[in-house]
Length: 188
Image (cartoon, rainbow, N blue to C red; front, side, top):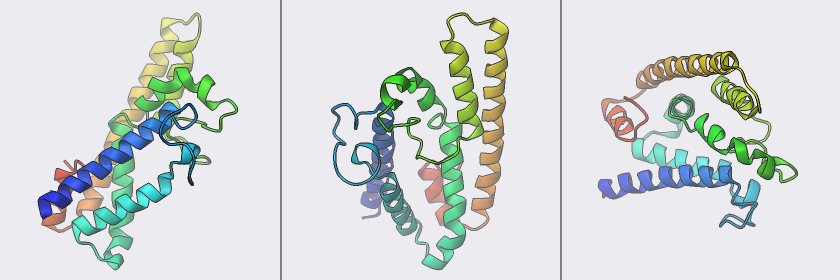
C-alpha cells in the first residue's frame, strides 16, 4: 500500500512537471491537450495542482493541519529553490525564450511557466539577461562572459539558499519524514 502511495506521489510530481513544461511550450495556445476549462492559460490550473500536490505531501508525511502551518511554508520554499537550482526555473526559460515572441505576444502566455504577477527570481532574471545578449545579432565575448558570470553567481546563491532552507525544514521533521523527503528528492 505504501509503495502504491509513493508511486502515486512520484506520478503526481511528474505530472506537475509535465504540465508546467507543456504550459511553458504554449501547447494550450497552439493545439495541445490543455485547451478549455478553468485555470491558467489553456485551462491548466497551476494553483489547484499545487494544492493537490501539497495535500498529497501532507498525507505522505503524516502531517497534521497544525503541523503543516510550520512545515508547509518551509517545504514550499525548498521546492521552489530546488526548481531554481535544478534548472526548472532558469533553464526552462532559456530553452523556450526563442519561442517567446510567438507565444507571449497577444496570447496571454507571458513568461513560460511564470504565474502572472509573480516576480522573477534572481536566477530567472540572470537567465533572461543572458538570453537577451545571446539573441543579439552582434555580441562581444565580454558581454556574454559578464551575463554568464552573473547567472552562475545567481545559481550559486540559490544553491546556498536551498541548503539553508533544507536545514530549516529538517528542524521540524521527524526522521521518517526526512527520509521520505530524501526519497522524493526534496532533501539531500
